[in-house]
Image (cartoon, rainbow over all chains, first blue to last red; front, side, top):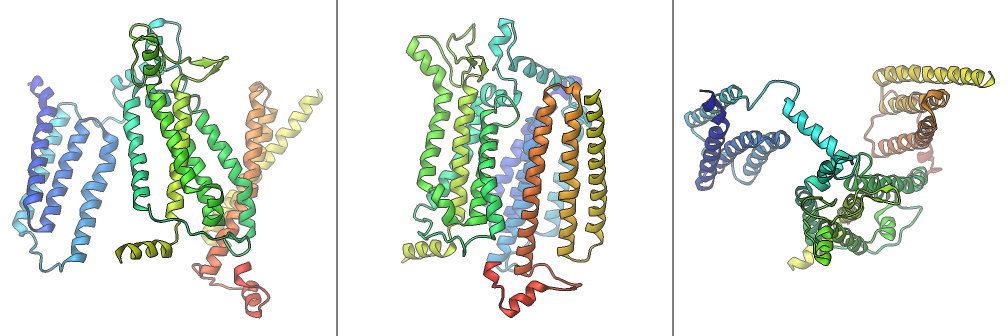
Length: 368
Length: 133
């Protein structure tokens, strides 16, 4: 019986996957839009269960309110606005009750089985296995004298940066490329728009003189702190992304307190795109530098390799230069990421602050 | 013995500053709850920022200077505290000013129990233009 309980999460996963596929099919073939939205909400419920069973509770926390609650609500609202609500024949009451009862019963049965099989626990603290895993990471991130720990080490005292850019570098690469794709999308939408050429006038634009003076003091400080956060990413909490976002605050302050026409003196969109591309090239170079060295010297190397691995690969970056810890590729990653994120957010803020009139001019010109 | 005496004096000063900070926080909390409209509540929040944050952070920095068992790292603590305090005292009034100005000219905050509004009178007289304030 206990063997069956061990199998239970996989069975529930299979049933959920099948049910979500059926719900997607029904949502596509359904002609009534309200019903289709409800089917897609059922599919999202099963997906949330799947995500939980695949052990990504953080995604479940985001997925349940957004995809089960918010998205169907927005869809129903939009349908209500586009069509007359009365013309859409609503679901018969019996059908909706049956669907609701089936989903509730399935959720309860699945939950009970999962509790029986220890896939879900009600304990506050995580199990001892996770602690062992954390202990392993904490022991191996920074150097140790044993050569076999050096094999797994990222040579960085900051475990989060080590995990993010060394142990799970490929994960982070795709995660971070989502943001870069979003910025590329924004640039593609706004490719004909430009900030109108207008002279910045000190007395008639922006907020009061008190705010401007304080911002003049503050902006260099913010950028210095941001660079410090970015460059110390392999030593202290923080890193390239956090530093870049902090520096982007300076751009938004300049736009809001002074004016866009003041901010474009220092951050032109095309210069920002160029610097961002330099940052992206830096990330790609840091990811492949070990394999490039290996190709040049005739050894073996891996993508996202940081330190030399005594068994598999002899090449790697030095973890210190002149006694200063740089943790191999982590410093390169953090610097490039800082530049790319800073300039990416600067582009976004500048694009968002283009006045509506000039955007509408361009759009009307295209249509005509 | 003189350094001990100096330490004692600095400790007493820092505890007094921290006590003033605690008092100001309580006063600001009462004011936030009891004041009738936006502008006087903004005054309460400024008391919280200056009296309740700037003064006790200075006190904590002085206290950190006196703790000799911390070694040289006490100077880092104190320096960070002083820098934070300077930024709070520079920037908290700016934030309050911009908030008050935006709330006044957008007419988002209702000035209900109005005792005096000198700015309104000046604008009516034409001495002050709205764009230059």
